[in-house]
Image 1 (cartoon, helix red, strand yellow):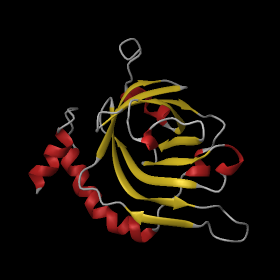
Image 2: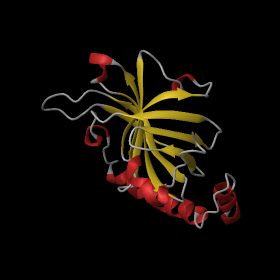
Image 3: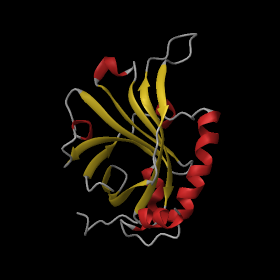
Length: 189
């Protein structure tokens, strides 16, 4: 499928936008595997440079929230999306007349992660991560981006901005090889 229908983000990056559910993974990590009891969602908005991963219970108990990792994204080449994780933790329910409960911490990340998108259409995305894991995700058109994506607080954005700009400079221009991102960061140190 990857050879018959290769992704090209220079012409189809807009297809990344949406809520994607993990349906297959070769990872051994339990949180990176599909489950009958858990929804493993990846929410992407590359036009706004935002995304998040969300692991939550299926069914009526999904509303209370789950484990979330928020990220900043950048399409770096025809196949690669660079990922800078901002913060992660537990997001609780939104209670009427109360602010949403959350226990979030800033993520310490010295080099960006990346995803190589190998197949992409309106329904299916196959990608490989920087740790070598392959994922197959299906788009969930019944779920809205605005339900899941939230802006991080301004203090986190300010603290992260200088590190992010250094990481981006280290990764661009990008030659597409898995090691070029980390090699660029190593040269800056």
